[in-house]
Image (cartoon, rainbow, N blue to C red; front, side, top):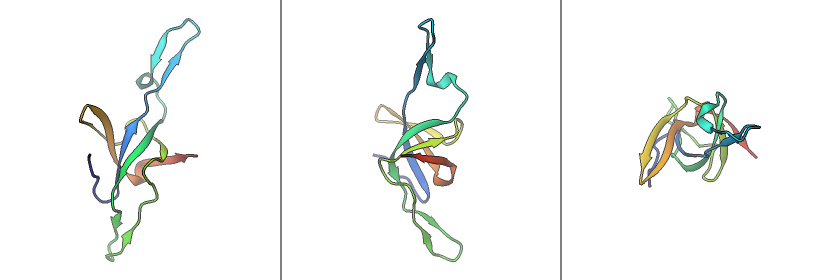
Amino acid sequence: MLKPLGDRVILEVQKEEEHTVGGIVLAGNAKEKPQTAKVVAVGTGRILKNGTKLEMTLKEGDVVVFDKYAGAQVEYDGHDYLIMREKDILAIVE
């Protein structure tokens, strides 16, 4: 499995599909809105300038909302993941 460094997280994107009234399927990537994903791994945290470590707020299993164009897409072991910094996450879905 991939292990993120510092304040980065690895997300498994949840594919979203929407059906129109006529039955046409719109893929999740056709929408211009934030997406949701499941956190599959978190880094150890960010090191501040004074040397102290700022612990991560997110944990594995959290479902989060992020901006559509945030992060770097990575394919690993046949799965698509996003790697991004914790500060780029917009919210945790409860």
